[in-house]
Length: 359
Ligand SMILES: *Cc1c(COP(=O)(O)O)cnc(C)c1O
Image (cartoon, rainbow, N blue to C red):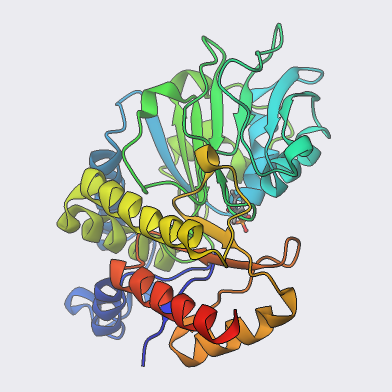
Protein backbone atom coordinates (compact mmCIF):
# COMPACT_ATOMS: atom_id res chain seq x y z
CA UNK A 1 0.00 0.00 0.00
CA UNK A 2 1.31 3.46 -0.85
CA UNK A 3 1.47 6.01 1.95
CA UNK A 4 1.34 9.77 1.83
CA UNK A 5 5.04 10.56 2.11
CA UNK A 6 5.84 13.94 3.67
CA UNK A 7 9.63 13.54 3.47
CA UNK A 8 11.69 16.65 2.69
CA UNK A 9 13.91 14.87 0.18
CA UNK A 10 14.27 12.44 -1.42
CA UNK A 11 10.56 13.06 -1.58
CA UNK A 12 7.35 11.64 -2.94
CA UNK A 13 7.05 11.33 -6.72
CA UNK A 14 3.85 11.37 -8.80
CA UNK A 15 2.27 7.91 -8.90
CA UNK A 16 1.54 8.00 -12.67
CA UNK A 17 5.26 8.61 -13.29
CA UNK A 18 6.30 5.71 -11.07
CA UNK A 19 3.77 3.47 -12.79
CA UNK A 20 4.99 4.43 -16.25
CA UNK A 21 8.63 3.88 -15.24
CA UNK A 22 7.65 0.53 -13.78
CA UNK A 23 5.89 -0.53 -17.02
CA UNK A 24 8.93 0.54 -19.04
CA UNK A 25 11.50 -0.84 -16.61
CA UNK A 26 12.58 -3.96 -18.48
CA UNK A 27 11.71 -2.99 -22.05
CA UNK A 28 11.97 0.71 -22.80
CA UNK A 29 10.39 1.86 -26.08
CA UNK A 30 10.64 -1.64 -27.56
CA UNK A 31 14.44 -1.75 -27.16
CA UNK A 32 14.38 -4.93 -25.06
CA UNK A 33 16.44 -3.00 -22.48
CA UNK A 34 15.75 -0.64 -19.62
CA UNK A 35 16.57 3.01 -20.14
CA UNK A 36 19.40 2.50 -17.62
CA UNK A 37 21.07 -0.01 -19.91
CA UNK A 38 21.38 2.06 -23.09
CA UNK A 39 24.19 4.38 -24.15
CA UNK A 40 23.82 7.98 -23.08
CA UNK A 41 25.05 8.88 -26.56
CA UNK A 42 22.45 6.76 -28.38
CA UNK A 43 19.94 8.62 -30.54
CA UNK A 44 17.10 7.39 -28.35
CA UNK A 45 18.61 8.70 -25.12
CA UNK A 46 19.79 12.00 -26.59
CA UNK A 47 16.15 12.48 -27.62
CA UNK A 48 15.12 11.96 -23.97
CA UNK A 49 17.49 14.72 -22.81
CA UNK A 50 16.39 17.09 -25.55
CA UNK A 51 12.70 16.49 -24.83
CA UNK A 52 13.23 16.96 -21.10
CA UNK A 53 14.98 20.29 -21.73
CA UNK A 54 12.28 21.42 -24.14
CA UNK A 55 9.48 20.54 -21.72
CA UNK A 56 11.25 22.31 -18.87
CA UNK A 57 11.77 25.41 -21.03
CA UNK A 58 8.08 25.38 -21.87
CA UNK A 59 6.96 24.87 -18.26
CA UNK A 60 9.20 27.60 -16.82
CA UNK A 61 9.12 29.83 -19.92
CA UNK A 62 12.92 29.91 -19.90
CA UNK A 63 14.17 32.65 -22.25
CA UNK A 64 16.39 31.56 -25.14
CA UNK A 65 19.46 33.31 -23.71
CA UNK A 66 19.59 30.83 -20.83
CA UNK A 67 21.30 27.43 -20.89
CA UNK A 68 19.77 24.41 -19.16
CA UNK A 69 22.34 22.02 -17.69
CA UNK A 70 21.79 18.57 -16.13
CA UNK A 71 24.71 18.10 -13.73
CA UNK A 72 25.82 15.89 -10.83
CA UNK A 73 27.09 16.55 -7.32
CA UNK A 74 23.81 17.88 -5.98
CA UNK A 75 22.99 21.40 -4.92
CA UNK A 76 25.92 21.03 -2.53
CA UNK A 77 28.28 20.71 -5.50
CA UNK A 78 26.88 23.97 -6.81
CA UNK A 79 27.85 25.72 -3.56
CA UNK A 80 31.40 25.23 -4.92
CA UNK A 81 30.69 25.50 -8.63
CA UNK A 82 29.02 28.92 -8.35
CA UNK A 83 31.97 30.88 -6.91
CA UNK A 84 34.38 29.00 -9.20
CA UNK A 85 32.33 29.78 -12.32
CA UNK A 86 31.13 33.28 -11.60
CA UNK A 87 33.87 35.02 -9.62
CA UNK A 88 37.56 35.85 -9.88
CA UNK A 89 39.92 35.28 -6.91
CA UNK A 90 39.39 37.99 -4.29
CA UNK A 91 35.97 38.93 -5.65
CA UNK A 92 33.33 40.32 -3.32
CA UNK A 93 30.09 38.33 -3.37
CA UNK A 94 26.86 38.91 -1.44
CA UNK A 95 24.93 36.19 0.37
CA UNK A 96 21.64 36.39 2.26
CA UNK A 97 21.54 34.17 5.33
CA UNK A 98 18.08 32.80 6.02
CA UNK A 99 18.92 29.40 7.48
CA UNK A 100 20.77 26.13 7.20
CA UNK A 101 21.11 25.92 3.44
CA UNK A 102 22.22 29.51 2.96
CA UNK A 103 24.80 28.96 5.69
CA UNK A 104 26.23 25.96 3.89
CA UNK A 105 26.46 27.95 0.66
CA UNK A 106 28.19 30.80 2.54
CA UNK A 107 30.72 28.49 4.21
CA UNK A 108 31.73 27.08 0.85
CA UNK A 109 31.87 30.45 -0.94
CA UNK A 110 34.22 31.78 1.77
CA UNK A 111 36.87 29.36 0.51
CA UNK A 112 36.99 31.26 -2.78
CA UNK A 113 35.68 34.79 -2.27
CA UNK A 114 35.18 37.66 0.14
CA UNK A 115 31.64 36.98 1.27
CA UNK A 116 29.46 39.83 2.51
CA UNK A 117 26.45 38.56 4.40
CA UNK A 118 24.14 41.43 3.46
CA UNK A 119 21.13 40.16 5.40
CA UNK A 120 21.04 37.73 8.32
CA UNK A 121 17.89 36.53 10.03
CA UNK A 122 19.65 35.17 13.13
CA UNK A 123 17.73 37.58 15.39
CA UNK A 124 14.45 35.79 14.60
CA UNK A 125 16.15 32.39 14.84
CA UNK A 126 15.62 32.11 11.09
CA UNK A 127 11.85 32.30 11.21
CA UNK A 128 11.70 35.35 8.91
CA UNK A 129 13.02 36.67 5.62
CA UNK A 130 14.63 40.12 5.27
CA UNK A 131 12.11 42.69 4.07
CA UNK A 132 12.60 43.96 0.55
CA UNK A 133 14.49 47.23 0.81
CA UNK A 134 15.97 46.40 4.25
CA UNK A 135 19.31 45.41 2.73
CA UNK A 136 21.44 46.56 -0.19
CA UNK A 137 23.86 45.02 -2.64
CA UNK A 138 27.54 45.70 -1.74
CA UNK A 139 29.49 48.01 -4.01
CA UNK A 140 31.30 45.90 -6.60
CA UNK A 141 29.55 42.63 -5.68
CA UNK A 142 29.99 40.00 -8.41
CA UNK A 143 26.70 38.27 -7.65
CA UNK A 144 24.02 38.00 -4.96
CA UNK A 145 23.09 34.53 -3.67
CA UNK A 146 19.95 33.60 -1.76
CA UNK A 147 17.80 30.62 -0.87
CA UNK A 148 14.18 31.37 -1.90
CA UNK A 149 12.92 28.45 0.19
CA UNK A 150 14.75 27.15 3.26
CA UNK A 151 13.77 23.48 3.33
CA UNK A 152 14.63 22.92 7.00
CA UNK A 153 13.30 26.13 8.56
CA UNK A 154 10.27 26.28 6.25
CA UNK A 155 11.00 29.92 5.46
CA UNK A 156 10.23 31.30 2.03
CA UNK A 157 10.76 34.65 0.30
CA UNK A 158 7.52 36.21 -0.88
CA UNK A 159 9.41 38.44 -3.32
CA UNK A 160 12.30 38.18 -5.77
CA UNK A 161 15.14 40.47 -4.65
CA UNK A 162 15.93 43.32 -7.01
CA UNK A 163 19.70 43.36 -7.47
CA UNK A 164 19.80 45.69 -10.45
CA UNK A 165 22.51 44.67 -12.88
CA UNK A 166 24.24 42.34 -10.38
CA UNK A 167 23.36 38.72 -11.22
CA UNK A 168 20.96 37.09 -8.78
CA UNK A 169 21.77 33.45 -7.96
CA UNK A 170 19.06 31.28 -6.38
CA UNK A 171 19.16 27.88 -4.70
CA UNK A 172 15.70 26.71 -5.72
CA UNK A 173 16.18 23.10 -4.64
CA UNK A 174 12.93 22.91 -2.69
CA UNK A 175 10.78 25.40 -4.59
CA UNK A 176 11.54 25.00 -8.29
CA UNK A 177 8.47 24.19 -10.40
CA UNK A 178 6.14 24.90 -7.47
CA UNK A 179 4.61 27.96 -9.24
CA UNK A 180 5.39 30.24 -12.20
CA UNK A 181 8.48 32.45 -11.83
CA UNK A 182 10.07 35.07 -14.07
CA UNK A 183 13.37 33.41 -15.00
CA UNK A 184 14.68 36.63 -16.55
CA UNK A 185 15.04 38.09 -13.03
CA UNK A 186 17.82 35.60 -12.29
CA UNK A 187 21.40 35.16 -13.47
CA UNK A 188 21.48 31.56 -12.31
CA UNK A 189 18.98 29.13 -10.81
CA UNK A 190 20.01 25.75 -9.45
CA UNK A 191 18.11 22.91 -7.83
CA UNK A 192 18.93 19.45 -6.57
CA UNK A 193 16.38 17.12 -8.15
CA UNK A 194 15.17 15.11 -5.17
CA UNK A 195 12.48 17.52 -4.00
CA UNK A 196 10.40 18.66 -6.95
CA UNK A 197 12.18 17.31 -10.05
CA UNK A 198 12.88 13.61 -9.65
CA UNK A 199 15.35 11.18 -8.07
CA UNK A 200 18.54 12.31 -6.33
CA UNK A 201 21.78 12.30 -8.29
CA UNK A 202 20.79 15.08 -10.65
CA UNK A 203 21.10 18.83 -10.21
CA UNK A 204 19.57 21.31 -12.59
CA UNK A 205 21.31 24.58 -13.50
CA UNK A 206 19.65 27.33 -15.52
CA UNK A 207 22.22 29.99 -16.34
CA UNK A 208 22.20 33.16 -18.39
CA UNK A 209 24.56 32.86 -21.32
CA UNK A 210 26.59 35.98 -20.58
CA UNK A 211 27.73 34.38 -17.30
CA UNK A 212 29.42 31.50 -19.12
CA UNK A 213 33.14 31.47 -19.86
CA UNK A 214 34.29 33.19 -16.66
CA UNK A 215 35.27 30.03 -14.77
CA UNK A 216 38.53 29.98 -12.84
CA UNK A 217 41.15 27.74 -14.48
CA UNK A 218 41.01 25.15 -11.68
CA UNK A 219 37.22 24.62 -12.08
CA UNK A 220 36.53 20.90 -12.57
CA UNK A 221 35.30 20.51 -16.16
CA UNK A 222 32.21 18.59 -15.02
CA UNK A 223 31.19 21.74 -13.11
CA UNK A 224 32.34 24.27 -15.69
CA UNK A 225 29.11 25.68 -17.10
CA UNK A 226 30.63 26.68 -20.45
CA UNK A 227 32.12 23.20 -20.94
CA UNK A 228 28.91 21.43 -19.95
CA UNK A 229 26.79 23.75 -22.11
CA UNK A 230 29.04 23.03 -25.09
CA UNK A 231 28.86 19.27 -24.42
CA UNK A 232 25.08 19.18 -23.96
CA UNK A 233 25.62 18.15 -20.29
CA UNK A 234 27.42 15.05 -21.61
CA UNK A 235 31.10 15.62 -21.03
CA UNK A 236 30.89 12.35 -19.13
CA UNK A 237 28.12 9.84 -18.47
CA UNK A 238 25.18 11.77 -17.05
CA UNK A 239 22.72 10.33 -14.49
CA UNK A 240 20.59 8.81 -17.25
CA UNK A 241 17.85 7.30 -15.12
CA UNK A 242 17.42 10.55 -13.19
CA UNK A 243 17.11 12.57 -16.39
CA UNK A 244 14.58 10.08 -17.77
CA UNK A 245 12.42 10.33 -14.62
CA UNK A 246 12.75 14.13 -14.56
CA UNK A 247 11.53 14.11 -18.17
CA UNK A 248 8.48 12.03 -17.19
CA UNK A 249 7.78 14.46 -14.36
CA UNK A 250 7.97 17.46 -16.71
CA UNK A 251 5.45 15.66 -18.99
CA UNK A 252 3.24 15.01 -15.97
CA UNK A 253 3.38 18.69 -14.97
CA UNK A 254 2.34 19.68 -18.48
CA UNK A 255 -0.57 17.21 -18.42
CA UNK A 256 -1.67 18.61 -15.07
CA UNK A 257 -1.96 22.04 -16.68
CA UNK A 258 1.47 23.60 -16.15
CA UNK A 259 2.82 25.78 -13.38
CA UNK A 260 -0.19 28.13 -13.09
CA UNK A 261 -2.42 25.18 -12.19
CA UNK A 262 0.25 23.55 -10.01
CA UNK A 263 0.97 26.85 -8.27
CA UNK A 264 -2.69 27.41 -7.44
CA UNK A 265 -2.95 23.84 -6.13
CA UNK A 266 0.17 24.33 -3.96
CA UNK A 267 -1.14 27.64 -2.63
CA UNK A 268 -4.40 25.94 -1.59
CA UNK A 269 -2.66 22.95 0.00
CA UNK A 270 -0.42 25.21 2.09
CA UNK A 271 -3.27 27.56 3.07
CA UNK A 272 -5.40 24.62 4.20
CA UNK A 273 -2.65 23.31 6.46
CA UNK A 274 -1.56 26.68 7.92
CA UNK A 275 -5.17 27.74 8.52
CA UNK A 276 -5.81 24.51 10.39
CA UNK A 277 -2.62 24.92 12.46
CA UNK A 278 -3.41 28.55 13.33
CA UNK A 279 -7.02 27.81 14.30
CA UNK A 280 -6.22 24.64 16.27
CA UNK A 281 -5.12 26.24 19.53
CA UNK A 282 -2.77 23.25 19.82
CA UNK A 283 -0.39 23.12 16.86
CA UNK A 284 1.92 26.05 16.17
CA UNK A 285 3.90 27.24 13.18
CA UNK A 286 7.25 28.75 14.19
CA UNK A 287 7.49 30.78 10.98
CA UNK A 288 6.43 34.41 10.48
CA UNK A 289 3.19 34.60 8.51
CA UNK A 290 4.69 36.47 5.55
CA UNK A 291 7.55 33.97 5.24
CA UNK A 292 5.72 30.65 5.39
CA UNK A 293 6.83 28.09 2.85
CA UNK A 294 4.34 26.48 0.48
CA UNK A 295 6.54 23.42 0.32
CA UNK A 296 7.89 22.68 3.82
CA UNK A 297 5.60 23.21 6.79
CA UNK A 298 7.23 22.82 10.22
CA UNK A 299 4.90 22.73 13.22
CA UNK A 300 5.09 21.97 16.92
CA UNK A 301 2.81 20.53 19.61
CA UNK A 302 2.63 21.81 23.21
CA UNK A 303 4.31 18.73 24.72
CA UNK A 304 7.46 17.76 22.79
CA UNK A 305 7.47 14.44 24.66
CA UNK A 306 4.52 13.43 22.44
CA UNK A 307 6.34 14.08 19.15
CA UNK A 308 7.53 10.50 18.76
CA UNK A 309 4.04 9.21 19.38
CA UNK A 310 2.61 11.71 16.89
CA UNK A 311 4.93 10.47 14.17
CA UNK A 312 4.45 6.76 14.84
CA UNK A 313 0.66 7.05 15.04
CA UNK A 314 0.71 9.09 11.85
CA UNK A 315 2.73 6.40 10.12
CA UNK A 316 0.22 3.78 11.26
CA UNK A 317 -2.44 5.97 9.60
CA UNK A 318 -0.49 5.99 6.32
CA UNK A 319 1.21 9.37 6.79
CA UNK A 320 4.98 8.90 6.64
CA UNK A 321 8.06 10.98 7.47
CA UNK A 322 6.57 13.78 9.53
CA UNK A 323 9.59 14.04 11.85
CA UNK A 324 11.13 17.52 11.92
CA UNK A 325 14.73 17.96 10.85
CA UNK A 326 17.18 16.74 13.48
CA UNK A 327 18.53 20.31 13.83
CA UNK A 328 15.18 21.91 14.70
CA UNK A 329 12.94 19.14 16.12
CA UNK A 330 9.16 19.35 16.07
CA UNK A 331 7.36 18.05 12.99
CA UNK A 332 7.57 18.99 9.34
CA UNK A 333 5.23 18.19 6.48
CA UNK A 334 6.81 18.61 3.06
CA UNK A 335 4.05 19.04 0.53
CA UNK A 336 5.79 19.23 -2.83
CA UNK A 337 4.06 19.11 -6.23
CA UNK A 338 3.56 15.34 -6.05
CA UNK A 339 1.67 15.51 -2.74
CA UNK A 340 -2.03 15.50 -3.65
CA UNK A 341 -4.61 17.63 -1.84
CA UNK A 342 -6.03 14.40 -0.38
CA UNK A 343 -2.68 13.86 1.39
CA UNK A 344 -2.95 17.23 3.10
CA UNK A 345 -6.60 16.55 3.98
CA UNK A 346 -5.67 13.18 5.46
CA UNK A 347 -2.91 14.83 7.50
CA UNK A 348 -5.30 17.45 8.87
CA UNK A 349 -7.86 14.78 9.79
CA UNK A 350 -5.17 12.89 11.67
CA UNK A 351 -3.92 16.05 13.40
CA UNK A 352 -7.46 16.91 14.51
CA UNK A 353 -7.92 13.42 15.94
CA UNK A 354 -4.54 13.46 17.70
CA UNK A 355 -5.31 16.81 19.26
CA UNK A 356 -8.64 15.55 20.60
CA UNK A 357 -6.97 12.58 22.20
CA UNK A 358 -3.99 14.45 23.69
CA UNK A 359 -4.95 18.01 24.48
C1 LIG B 1 18.22 19.58 -0.26
C2 LIG B 1 18.80 20.93 -0.41
C3 LIG B 1 20.16 21.12 -0.71
C4 LIG B 1 21.15 19.97 -0.79
O1 LIG B 1 20.95 19.21 -1.92
P1 LIG B 1 21.94 18.01 -2.28
O2 LIG B 1 21.42 17.60 -3.61
O3 LIG B 1 21.78 16.98 -1.21
O4 LIG B 1 23.32 18.55 -2.33
C5 LIG B 1 20.61 22.41 -0.87
N1 LIG B 1 19.78 23.46 -0.78
C6 LIG B 1 18.47 23.32 -0.49
C7 LIG B 1 17.60 24.52 -0.39
C8 LIG B 1 17.95 22.05 -0.31
O5 LIG B 1 16.64 21.90 -0.03
